[in-house]
Image (cartoon, rainbow, N blue to C red; front, side, top):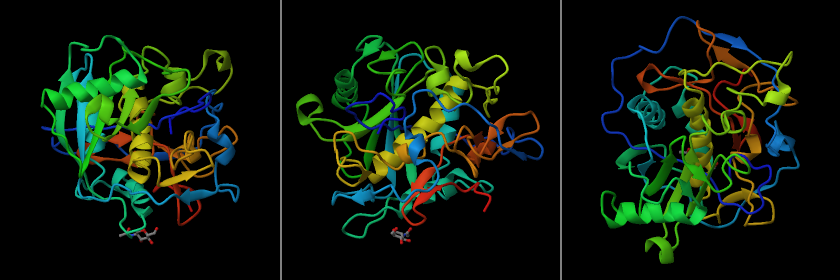
Length: 348
Ligand SMILES: *[C@@H]1O[C@H](CO)[C@@H](O)[C@H](O)[C@H]1NC(C)=O
């Protein structure tokens, strides 16, 4: 479900998307510098996260399959909707992340593509696994805030409706997912209080079709300590407490969005219609494969530790390598094979 689920009572799920056009192929490792060291920062747990009880492995987790489809068509086509004002470097950072999912985007281990492999272990009753390949199939910029600077869960569906109606984006029933990203000045229902993003599907009455989608907001101005944790930590924990980590790409809000986008895409792919993979008995508030591992980024995490992650020569924290020489800090996911949270930077 949503990536900050603390208070979340009824929820939709989160996800995210992108498209890229010119993306990333600037030459190589311009962002990579020097060797990386491992560190194991102790940080206070995010105040709104209630998923910590599942951290690490647990026999209490009863993740079950509910007979619905997963996103098995290949490639998964992401249609990105940029709502509000986005700067090019912000868009490029998010696109570089999305372009790193597919195996073709070769990056050194531990990589984003290796991280996605955990999601491809989920399959449906036909035996079809989640696709290994994800592309940015289209992009649309809603620069004029067509539905205003305050959005509700339902008006987000209207943003998708206008994007497919005015036809900058196709209605892609087979492979499509729609990812709406709101700029830092856009207020979204429950944003910062209960959610940092969510995923769900559109309703025929709103959009004309049932299409899986996700929303993620840039929290940099509104609540970085909630949604861009651990790059910002709550003020009441400051003074003598552990310091926030330095974001891998120098942008607290957008680097924070990256992990939320990863969370939502993993859940959207394994539970697109909210009838496939989730734990708990309540389908209106499912606990999904990202929820189970929120706040965990490396080995030894839990109890206030995010786990062992890497630090580059400039002190910036990351746990995954991506295409275009990028580095990212992305939360771990629940593995149906290991029955535990895992990621490619695991030390054991
Ligand atoms: C598909 O999922 C099953 C069940 O988790 C797994 O055993 C298998 O390795 C997966 N196939 C691929 C190609 O990843």
